[in-house]
Length: 88
Image (cartoon, rainbow, N blue to C red):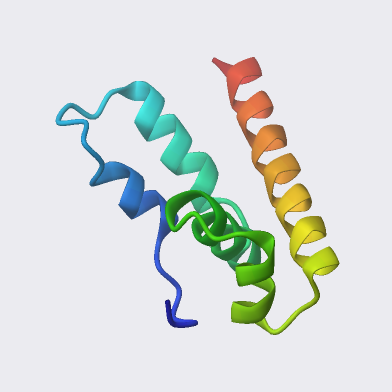
């Protein structure tokens, strides 16, 4: 993994699912609204399966900071998902 930003939403679209339905479009829209930091931490944890220790080493931060950033990123995504559901 290099620090170059890998679009998390693009990796979801290229997943095993051949049909892109409204749920995937909704999810990728929410992900695209996240900060680059949030996208990066979620990509490392979810897509690459990095442990918090590996994330910490990759980003040159402490393990505690990696856990905290992951928690913030998940909460930010949850908020976006909840806002979108209310407007449907």
